[in-house]
Image 1 (cartoon, rainbow, N blue to C red):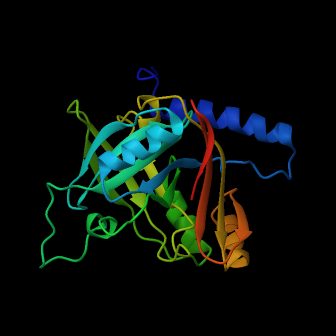
Image 2 (cartoon, rainbow, N blue to C red):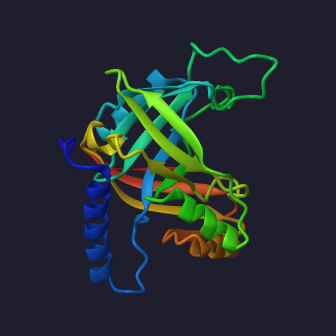
Length: 243
């Protein structure tokens, strides 16, 4: 467990390790996983079925994380290695949607017929710097907003996040800055899985590549017939792929 390591120290150590690995690959080599990738989101219509889906493929059972008040969702988590994790996100039956409110993420997930990757997050130590960098490049991005989630043990995780106003149908990430008092989910989620490769595909690959570069994201971008996230994970049962 790393709960006694500060968040900033933990990120700094992880970044140094990744930088050394990428240096060994060569200055022009694209890392198999984006250096700043924080987590990937697997959307499912039912959390228990999503947990079973991942356990069948990986041999690791995800841990219930908590609920997202106001979003209509709850989640379960798996560590994917240092500073990375998988979030299985599903509707929260206890949060009933109201006809007077806009459709929540939970409402959207109810329609899923099979689990699929729906997004990813890139971490940062200074979210406002990211917002300013995006604005300077002419990229529309939301102002940082506060987020929180109560864990089953009662501890509250807090963060700030900003989403791009145009993420090319979900292939570019949102950005997250974790509160200095919050333990990163990868540190206490069940272990046994490693994210080996992560890439994105898009019919607008050239524009996506430009946007990723302006935002400082070292993510592999490939041409594709439709927007797609692709993750190769190695678990206790071997390697498998999520899209």
